[in-house]
Image 1 (cartoon, rainbow, N blue to C red):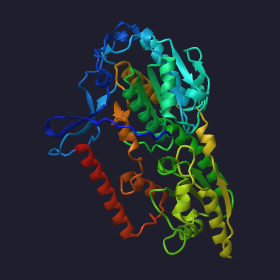
Image 2 (tube, rainbow, N blue to C red):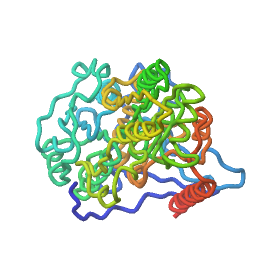
Image 3 (cartoon, rainbow, N blue to C red):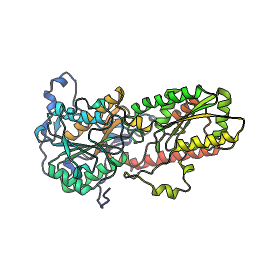
Image 4 (spheres, rainbow, N blue to C red):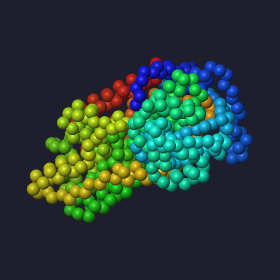
Length: 482
């Protein structure tokens, strides 16, 4: 990524009575000081929406980040509600939009592409939409394709992305030069936290040049580790597909004496897929995630639990997130820090293969126990599937919310559901940290209750973890208030 120095504007913070805080997103009128003309929203004449009462969102509508509050607590942080406005800042025939997908594959990418194209065309009469091929570097190194409703009609039934994708390749100046040269004035960027950081830098350069270009991000991560929003698209599909691997592991393990089915699922830093797949399956005896350290040997360790489970049931299923136990796989953290992919992500070693070898080695030393272990890694099968019905609907809402925001002149934002209502969120809020499983929360407790596994935490470690999480929450609240 181009790290040229650039001064970001101060966050747009609006305060109100009773501790109300609105973290607003930028608008074209913030930096284009000429009088920007507005136009009636074409949706007012669209017969599909003529029966909808109060279809246009009130400009003062906001969405609360924290939905559970005490009666005497402040109202807290809010975000601007997504949706169509009565006035738009682009005329339909002047819009020249582009779409780019970056990072790894995820179910639903093609659905988002399709719904941006069809939404622009059917709701706003926009006919010029470009697809940027091959991720960020495609702005200046690859061809583009013209996207029409006919071109994208069936793409939601396929996995992957018709535009192609890549990691890295971000050169801010070249990208914005390309946007200017092509006459693009709406940019839709689909990708994870690294991609959204890149989108934020692109927006800052566009703002610095004073261009009338709206930049909208659609957050994508199969791991569900983007903060603020309720969940990321593709997550439901991933959990559903993970069930197939878990079912296979369960059939294999229960068909032989002392059978162990070991399934590695995605989750570099966050164990949401592993946890939800475990809860949905009810066939899992042990779930290991990055947020909850585990140890192998000694009293209360994983090996002891495996022996106990095999003696009790004669078989077991273990689910491990790819980021779990990485501290055991590296000699020191220095080696870990230096190994990164093009997106800047730390390259992980195969914890599933390592754990399967460790279990085999341990049991071979116990002459009284012979095991039959099957290791299943469905990672790339899960990433490549088309999105399911739930994600298809969700991707449609994300795409439409992004379109409404861009047409209304908002820019430098990402979109997503906050407590069930779609909102426009400043880029910095979704890139400042990663969403993680809170192991002192009820959901992780439900998972442990489902598997009957020990937490692998000593009481002292549990208290320290709880204090650490509470301190982090208080710190985030302090930042929001400031």
